[in-house]
Amino acid sequence: MAEHPIEGLMKSALDSIAQMIDVNTILGDPVETSDGHVIMPVSKVSLGFAAGGTEWESGDRGQRSQDTSGSGGQLPFGGGSGAGISLNPMGFLVLNNSGVRFLPVSGEAVFDRLLDVVPDLITKLATPAAKRTTTTTTLV
Image (tube, rainbow, N blue to C red):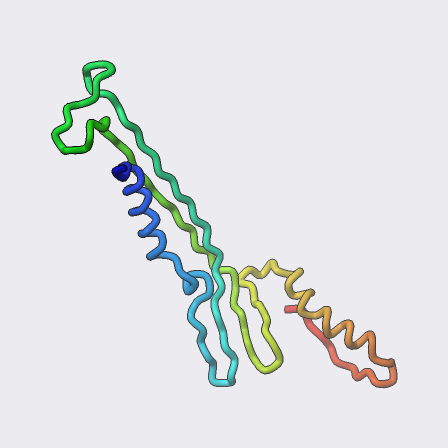
């Protein structure tokens, strides 16, 4: 059975999308700093895709159009496809000897900053009071 024209439209659109998006779109190329930190940009990708088409009869109701293309008497086809993509930077992954941190681009990420502080706070509360040293932790 011959391929329907809508299949060609969809394949063409999906091939174009595949060329635009790969893992480097979401996680950017890592950059190493002079002090040994590795920084990787992180983005959020949103994608939409649509395809559609129709076949219509010729002027003679109920009769298929004259087959001049060798298509086996198929009805004329009209269709289209499209895609949209949105790429939003979310933050940076910072890797160093002490671990991995996510630094969000948005300054409104108070919850994320609190999650960074919680492990230190639990450690300080778990150690006896005599062994504690006075250090301060600031939220940026």
